[in-house]
Length: 265
View 1 (cartoon, one colour):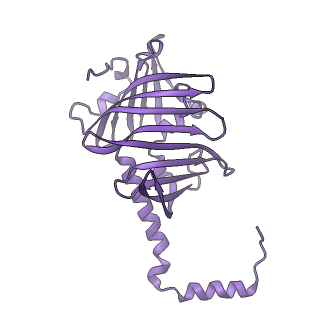
View 2 (cartoon, rainbow, N blue to C red):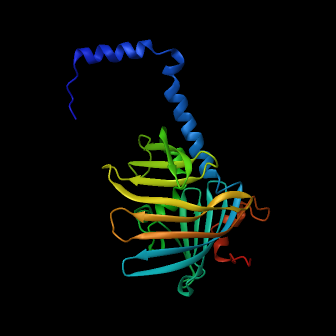
View 3 (cartoon, rainbow, N blue to C red):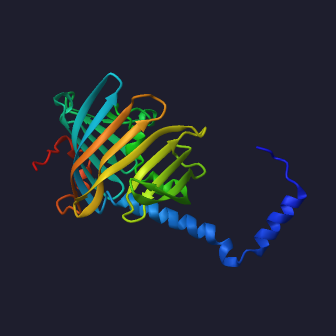
């Protein structure tokens, strides 16, 4: 890109800026706030005050694939539990996000292990999701700037296109994120994740929208690696509930995760 700026160009830019009415000068800030609200509302679609879900995650590799069945609970933005149902060798493993910490109960050794920061970029259960992806679920709202960048169609839905850039000193790993959020129902239908060099690392798509727990939500998610050919992770959600009356913060305590039992549906 050429860095030389001609004086005529400077004068033209100044003229255009001065000629803009006052409300137009404030428009970018308004647009950025609107973009953040759209991202926040989309994020909260899957949460509610609390939630419960059942899903199957399939890890696909060029020469093999395996499936993991799980149940999950959430309370607000800060408390999450994932209970592994199958395969048999992993059944009973529990992952807990408690505020800013993440823990793993391994029944085979009857131990609860705190996941250190050095392991946050490791693959979760061998998938294309990392521990950081699970830990920083609400990071897209709190740790990034948000900018509307046009409109595009995804699977027939008119979508807002929103660019996310990390805030200075934000504890995040992505250099940028791009989101496509449906205008009609605010579901996020596509996300692209870029590293700090601007390279596309992975792409997540959401489809097969269904009514679950009284909300229209995607039931099929795919995270595809853009740097490892043939690597992807598929999540199919079979059941979703919101605003549960039988869980509170005590349910998400470190002491309790040893005793969590899966629900019979």
